[in-house]
Image 1 (cartoon, protein in one colour):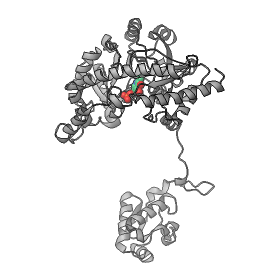
Image 2 (cartoon, helix red, strand yellow):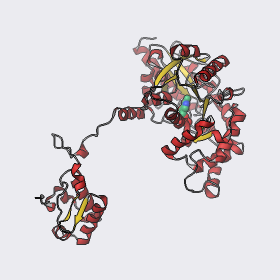
Image 3 (cartoon, helix red, strand yellow):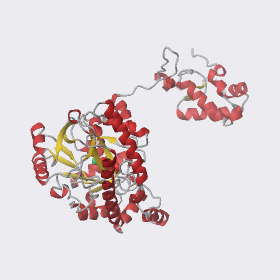
Image 4 (cartoon, helix red, strand yellow):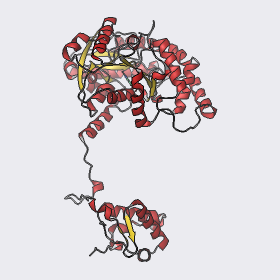
Length: 500
Ligand SMILES: Cc1ncc(COP(=O)(O)O)c(C=O)c1O
């Protein structure tokens, strides 16, 4: 015989607070919780709506409303003779109550190893505070000018950027067309608009590449050091990619070395125009060797071209894609030349990859916000992007000189020296080998200084301490103060580690 639910005796029913209103919603939640935590079991009958209403001194209609909602959710069922009862479909529901008597909602869910790994990664990818020496913060003279804001207003009010239905997963045509013309002109990339897919930054493009290009356990070459967004991604996707770290020298990735270690790899992830984070361009000899290998192996080269537009003088180095469009997947971004929160980047793909790439793109988030794409398309088409780039190149060149002067003023060369370079938005400050860059970067945050430890970009075997220092356009007073603080931290650490 079925147990009779003494519904009015349910401890939770005392939670019903008539003074708070929405009594039917409260009752629904109380009954739903009672079923979920096992106070009411599958098959338990509930009192009639009349009985429950009178025992709680509420209207019968209120109870009926709550029952109807739970019947619609499948929590309760109803039958002509037996009345309302907890649905039998819930009989498999296991209610876990631990020895301390805790209810399931009090217990921590079991996290898979990949969930735990991603939770750890989140800590590493927290946004950097907008403080000296953060990289690519759009402050001061590098902030996009008023045209950007005006275009936004204009297009949202009455242009193509008004609300619409779903758009193309590949990205709006006007933006793809504008990017194709821009990268052909400025980066010697060979492409048509049809080969371009708009992404939420290079990060998303890297993710899609990692999902569509490789068999499980594929070997891939990754520069050593390399961008953590690439290494953390490849190390954590379920395909269990075999990441073969290849050291870089002043000519870029050591292709000879890679050929000896892993000749049959399926891909190479590289930053040929401006090695991340060290800053040198890949030599022509290395480019040719890399392409020759990729052609022979039918391997892919993933070219991360994140900030090459920003060169202090002379032309940016041409892309690798222009030398071998069938082998190279070219990734570009507006995070550096405009601002990171825009979340717009692009992949230039060999034609056969466009459909699979867009298919996955559609499943992730359909497509990037159309309004931003239209605004950016007009910004590029009307020549403002290139004007903006010309302006910020001068600013970064000036800021580079200022950083060099600051380091000279506040730090002895025996403890820290800057790696020379003439492009990009950051510089590397090498530290005395006995210093711990992670500890220094953490201490710096506490005094409002934002630097990144370079050792995290290396494989364990190659690690050496240094700081990645951004050239964002903070004012001179702020920069002096920040450098003083940082120098103090480094000197204190040097004292502790006996490097003085
Ligand atoms: C080398 C490198 N690649 C890719 C990215 C990712 O850029 P996005 O903001 O376009 O995802 C960054 C960002 O800092 C980077 O430094």
